[in-house]
Amino acid sequence: MGSKPDQPPLVVIVGPTASGKSALALDIAERWNGEIIAADSRTIYKGMDIGTAKPTLTDRDRVRHHLIDIVDPDQPFTVSDFQRLALAAITDITARGKLPILVGGTGLYVDAVLFNFSFRGASDPGQRQKIASLSVDELQAALKSLGLPLPRNERNPRHLVRVIETGGAPAVRQQLRPNTCIIGLDVDRETLAQRIADRVNAMFEAGLEKEVADLVDAYGWERPPLQTIGYQEFRLYLSGGISAQELRQLIITHTLQYAKRQKTWFRRNKSIHWISKTDEAVALVTTLLNK
RNA sequence: GCGGGGUUAGUGAAGCGGUCAAACACGGCUGACUGUAAAUCAGCUCUCUCCGAGUUCGGGGGUUCGAAUCCCUCACCCCGCA
Image (cartoon, rainbow, N blue to C red; front, side, top):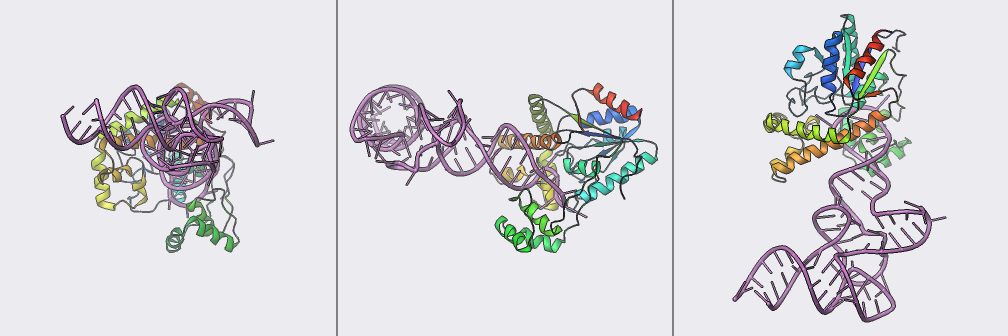
């Protein structure tokens, strides 16, 4: 089902963590009667509120949010699921005469919607478990014997596994979705570092440790959602490996590193309008809607 | 004051006569990444006129063809005896 000639307007807000995406999205939503779709691989999970800086109930009361709290941490969820649900949400919001606003820091999720990725087939859980236990060298050897090419990230076990699962089918993407305005929040290094440190400290004050403990009680450490920054570090701390002080610093460091990866991802999308002030976003959205 | 141990690149830490600009880890920088993506993976990280060259291993002085590695000495840190 290719893209239709006339797509309804879509506002997209991206940027590194703690850059102010949520606040800007709320602002724009209230100004133009919009609804927010979270493009975030962690806020989809129930019970992960503090550590993911999930929009508060108050915020969600002000503006309707989609794709938050939609699965339990022990349920599998993939980009493909996200794409399907996000596209449905856009259709739904538009049908009700409102403006859809896609907001998030998970670059892959955002791009799956913006470029209408065609995915290449799910993995068979049984087979996945078997091949995922192979070493990088074994995976490469397996690809060779199957006559499949190595992926670009040839030492990345996850990518190697996927090549096997898809039989080496190429990735397919379309042109950028028409009628879409992508706003990127640009925050200088020092400011972002400060905001991240403040946010992490606030998370501890808000009861992060208890949230983590509850999740671990319910699901254990092995589930993918528990590999989230702000949660995974507690494993070391709780086993006595690091002090409370070091724990906090480690989470801050990991968050900073994550923010850098996000910037790298978004940097290559030349369609993003990078801004640093709200007025610039308002101007961009105004232009989009007046077309 | 005497005896013993220590001082290595941003940090931690190997090295203990040549193959050392110096392992490894962390941190930092750059980048990749379409069904685990807040995941995962890669390159770079003393300096320069950067296929080569020049300064490093607490300071200074020696030994040696050759020293981060041995000796002397000074400084600082830790432990033991006073």
